[in-house]
Image (cartoon, rainbow, N blue to C red; front, top):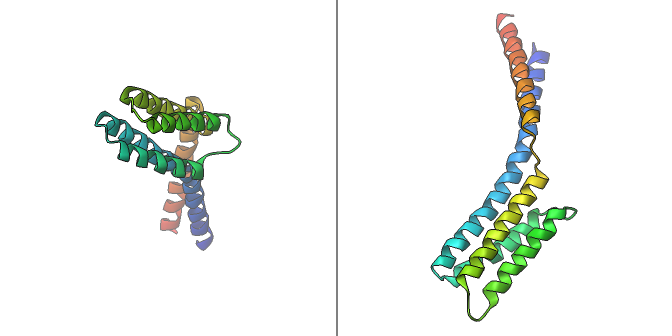
Length: 147
């Protein structure tokens, strides 16, 4: 009985581990998207100090999560530099800064897709396997309850 409970616990923890890595990566990038979105909104208000702070926070967080060996990393770095340069101009052009921030967001999306490619057919197959796995766990639990 204890062997079965241990097996069930291991299976559940293993399953949770498979999905947790993807969630962590997405969460880190979500914070970056929030900073860009807020910077775009503050650009419309010409609140340059907040835009500057957001870009600095973005830069710090980006340097912590970016994959050095990625082709898309260089594009995010380039767009970040472009946004910072546009913001550093003595006469701020809100339209240009917004365009640069939008380009940064698109580059980040491209990076995210590169790092976490999704194939809908493979994802469906994973779910089907998970359902089978869950059915097996339920049967094991029922057998333990009966014994």
